[in-house]
Amino acid sequence: MKMCKILDCDAKNCIYNKNKKCHTMAINIGDTEPICDTFMNSPSKGGFDDVIGGVGSCKVGSCSFNKSFECAAEGVHMSVIGNHVNCKTYHKK
Image (cartoon, rainbow, N blue to C red):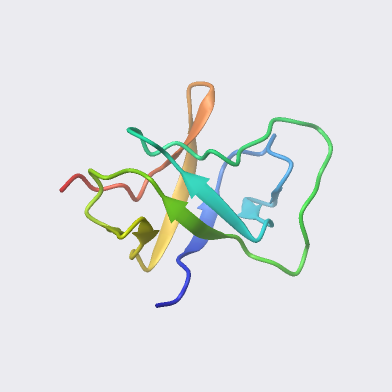
């Protein structure tokens, strides 16, 4: 199984976001909701320019892409919803 990649993310204020791409090795998603647990709001930037982020773990048991707490989607889209970032690829079982 390959790590699911983050195709795009519109959380411009996240330290790992550069040009709508996530540049950390991996993010963790959720508990009961598909929220990015790795999101950090800051004007400073981190991560690695040559890395496109993946989904390290998914804790959202109600998602049809969750296979043993790994994301089996071909890729995910992340988007700001209110004051947090959600996985827009989430699909309820």
